[in-house]
Length: 87
Image (cartoon, rainbow, N blue to C red; front, top):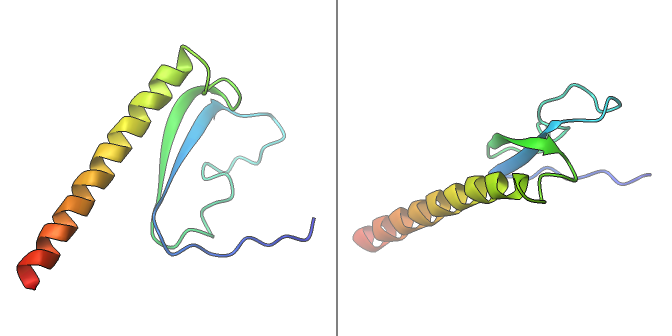
């Protein structure tokens, strides 16, 4: 009940199930928007919350996750190259 989530300065990727329960507020960011200060990317994944981690929907989620990981690794490599060049 009384927990208040702190703000987060980094970037967040939210894998959002496309089928939400009726009682969920129609907030595409599912409440994360005001907490994330470094950018919020929302990736819609077909199915409801419990189904996106089971086949065949898990394959879609895995594809999205793999793409995000490749991008993060590429961004980190570019940052390291830039740091090395400046040293």
